[in-house]
Image (tube, rainbow, N blue to C red; front, side, top):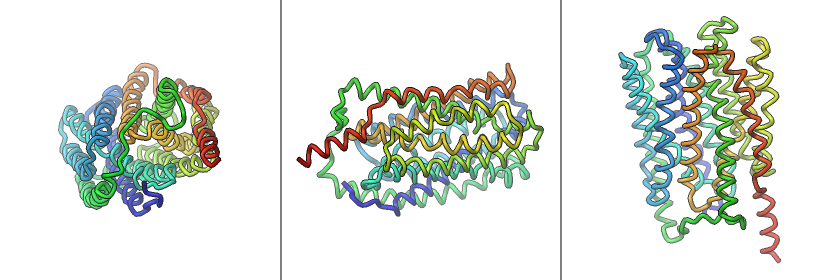
Length: 401
């Protein structure tokens, strides 16, 4: 096991995550453009996100499972190549069906990139897994924040065909990930004789039933988090335009502010979890955001923007803590756990986008936020999670005596 955190690998992963998610976030960022150009309904907009998220959701656990069995160091670059192909197709799409195909290739790229990159981040984490996951995640959140800004500055003024320029970004990502793949290959050779067999034992004297129930609770929390987040990432611009009559560019800048707060919250959650315990971070992040989500549908424009920033900051701190908590429950199955949670997160985001789009068509976009406001209350399930940090302290004390 690596005791020292390999920051150069984590920075490379974070940077490639930034590039990957910046390209992916271009799709929802140009929804207003696509809606007008192709005369799409909100349900059709939701189906684009659903297509992207569903493909990523279904494939990611399988990618993680097989990467545990036989790691393939250069698969990260292959995943980025799929995203590149999706962007090329999106830039030239002339029909709604071609847009869905392009979104599908972007989803395929995510299904390869996220579980394997998370597994490599774990390899490079040393004794600071929360920090490592936060560094990896913050790159993706920063990329998601840049996507709307770049779309507003480059794509909206020039049109759909300007998406092709972002293929250069994908090429940069492929080069970076080839270097990461080289480090991973060397590390796998060095540790080939020390690989532990995979097992369901959590290492915390928890029964199999307790481990399974804990995983199910964590997945319920992911459902709460990503159903709410997708309401903002996919429909926030429409909400601002519909309720406050702002321009599309102004709405995209507000979306950028929200995504920026998500990036900031992500970098906070991992180190705080390492220091004080992941369960406490999960408590504060999921349930703690409820007062703000309940208030958001009833305030003016300035307060709406401010509350969305606070919501993004608090809610985004949960994922790194949840993922590392799950990895500690199943320490021999890092790739599978990463794929399961990334895949479930993508799936819930896609399902949420589809269902919320239908709801917006029938009841109005404002009603979406009145319903979603109650989702963070699911965070009360955190009370049933075992305190792994306390168990570790007890076990370490017993070992010392």
